[in-house]
Image (cartoon, rainbow, N blue to C red; front, side, top):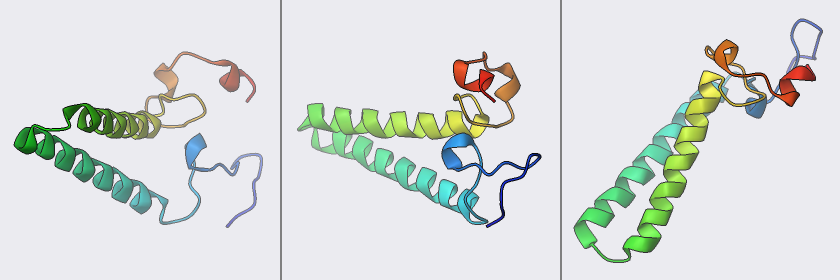
Amino acid sequence: MAFATADNPLRGPAAGGTLGSGSSYKDAMLTLALSLALLVVVIVMIVRRRHLTILMSVASLLAGLLAMLWLQDLGLLPGSQGPLTHTRPQTLEDARR
């Protein structure tokens, strides 16, 4: 792992950076796993038609996590860098940089 410099600060995944060369692979696998889990929950909701309250809660949680990953990848969350970072309104965290 490289050291942080002025032109290349070391950031973790929460700040839009990477921890290593396999980070994008890990992100893709996490997105795939969450997507498959959401698909399974929706199918169980349609087929079983029981315990809908807990299944809707689980589906909402999984969908929220997928949305957060998507927004982070686009750079729309405070502290993240991505292709749409310039369109995001400035926050206090951005002002500290």
